[in-house]
Image (cartoon, rainbow, N blue to C red; front, side, top):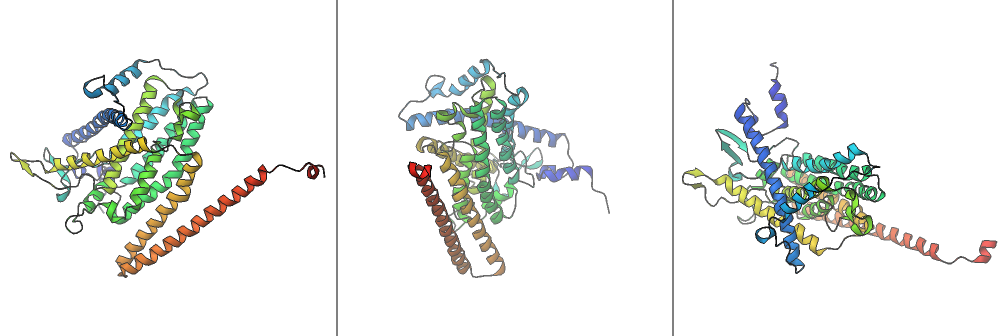
Length: 429
């Protein structure tokens, strides 16, 4: 048997066709260029996102929002970043100095690494490949076989930045914020993973590129696209949207930094550029999460090619970029809209929603989709499988609701007994 080359063993981590053969300076240069462009785009997108959110919130609150720095206040984020860069950098005396300085980077880096697996463009009516300098490649930084699992891993790692920031500050309020963060992440990570599992089930792979290819297939009735939000029956999208918002610590799930209770939350002791890194990570994670939602549920860059060539130059791949950013803009608008509309949850409501609602719903719907897939493979009557599965799902939901209400009534009775005034004669006896 012929021994495998050293390069082929390495390339199992990257499914990009450009890396399928020999690797030369062109391949290395293109890979580095894609990484640099993606990172630069994220930085610029964060600056615009902060301005967009402040401007949109101002309009929703009947305020002007940023107006002074630059046209329409668009340079306000740059002014704030410059101010933070030159402010005094403080490190508490009781802090763990090394961990305190490391924590902001643990929040920032996973957001960029997760963004690396997102397809940003390409003509997915013809496979989604683009050709540059004679090399066929994908318009994404990397397409590892583990695909979407890399996103789940990075979202799990990101919580360490928040947790260690609070722990290393040497103060009780940041510590409470970091404890809340760890509990919140654990509560919603399971629902997030089950929603992703539903997408993996219907698309048949982990690669984000393959997921977009599957959604670019012929839709329903020649009009309705084959997006996973439709194929999976909307429920995984709702679960992922809610769980993703909780993972981002954005309102109404921002108890990690609840100012009324915890001063400023886990970053209370941070200032200057380190505070700016946490601020940057929050908005970068919002953009990355929105891009992941677009990729998983709304076809990513897949869309119609209105003009294939312009002046003899193939621009079909550029339409993928256009559709991707239009979808991304709508998702970012929804995140800002939720922030302006919904009040903050109580902590018990936060836990109840994660454990008693999202996880059971996500698990039940995943089993329902599994039953449909098995039924199609074995030739079962699809209508009968759907009816039986939904009946079982409804019965399980009723049992869960009954158990939750029974537990709540038991807690209320116990609380009522503990609040009753005691009888002194009984106490003497």
